[in-house]
Length: 220
Image 1 (cartoon, rainbow, N blue to C red):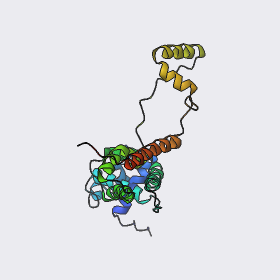
Image 2 (tube, rainbow, N blue to C red):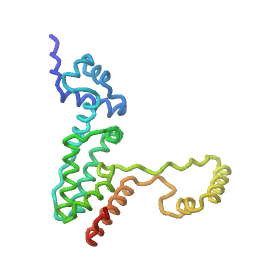
Image 3 (cartoon, rainbow, N blue to C red):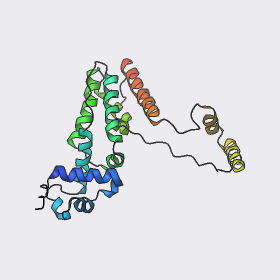
Image 4 (cartoon, rainbow, N blue to C red):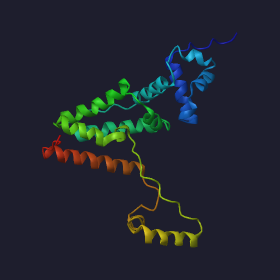
């Protein structure tokens, strides 16, 4: 006797989409592919999600729901930092999540809740609405645990002579870049993404705190 197939519902649809995206990437989680993985027709999915855009929203909300809770500790910078790093940890478990976030045109309830918690922590620290508004813009994608890197620099040739010639050429044209790359600790190797992220986040939060202490306000 065959085992009855589990009843299809939104949770199963979203879980299947996340599994596909985790294994094959963001684009792999199409409505058709999700339906095939569940052994149903694509039309069956529309009883549970309106379209792929809603499916992606549901996938992101599920990921954000896995963000470890953080407890306020009376220091707004620490509270904001802890929450952002917890969100970064949840997002990084799913390689497709960053791309998904950047495609969104509307904020889901969990997205709004995350933003609301960050803003509330700043208000609790005494920051003005004016400064909080600008701080949220400054945080940008960093509030989701990632940032956009600078454009990649050209790759150097493997051949030692060609490599030396290329470096000499770059040094003549772009001396400041070569000075940094050859003298800064770790600049010539793969960067520590976590350390770089923490550095930039702390730089922003410390700068925002300085403006708060100085009584900063916009000139609009």
